[in-house]
Length: 205
Image 1 (cartoon, rainbow, N blue to C red):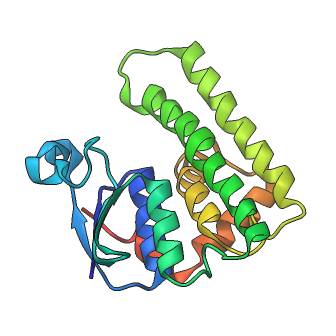
Image 2 (image 1 turned 90 degrees about the horizontal axis):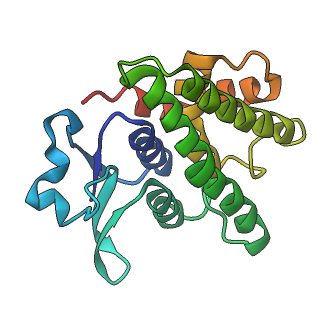
């Protein structure tokens, strides 16, 4: 049984989606960031950088596995689930990796900074807000252009899509809007309709 440690952030939703899509048996373990539970000594043994999400798998390769970082968790779940979400063929895997890393290392950091300066900082910082809004919109345009010729980011639905969906939903569909990006909107709505995604987003702390 996998234990998934999460909170209701964009990265937490990635892990929840990956877990639901994998179909693997698991137990959800909320870590309330508002109560600083991520700094508890027991949790730091699992996630040394006091971040969510994280997981513990007592039936991992070679025995007990502890893992943090949302991208690494998605890869782990995709591989353990048998390759549907993370293909084994090298050519397909490289395409998934490209968009997984773009989502994890480019798109999500820009989206998180946009969210931070727009919703969490009390003082108005219009130039900073505008800068990060433009960066997020640029990512939307990258996705939209690519999705004009692809149903999903790496061909078939994969962990690459899971890595990019939460911030598109939070900061796009429910934030800046994605109506000007019809291919991205089509992709978003197709993913939103998936039963596993609906289960993941119905989770509360």
